[in-house]
Image 1 (tube, rainbow, N blue to C red):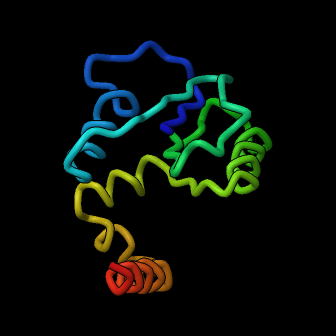
Image 2 (image 1 turned 120 degrees about the horizontal axis):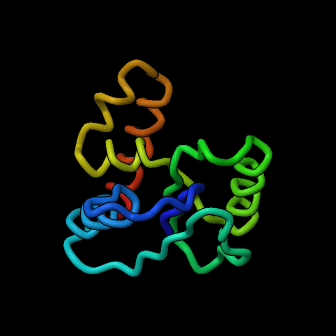
Length: 118
């Protein structure tokens, strides 16, 4: 699911409704079922999702965003933000994490573990 906290009118090449879904499909090499959530229309049942990609949440307060994160955690659904998702999908995540050595190490460790599981 791609979640946006605001309810703006979608533009022609909207980041959450067009670009990120396109990059996700290119990354997996096929079609995906991608739901979107906008404004206050955040689903109560998150269990059907494998991942939530959330905007920067500038239109909601801290408490509301923490509530969304809590709901996702309780449902066992990982959450990331637009920036991290985009840097991963565009192949620049390691460069993006370089200023944060522990985060980069955690990322590389997890990727190696996933490679061994394949």
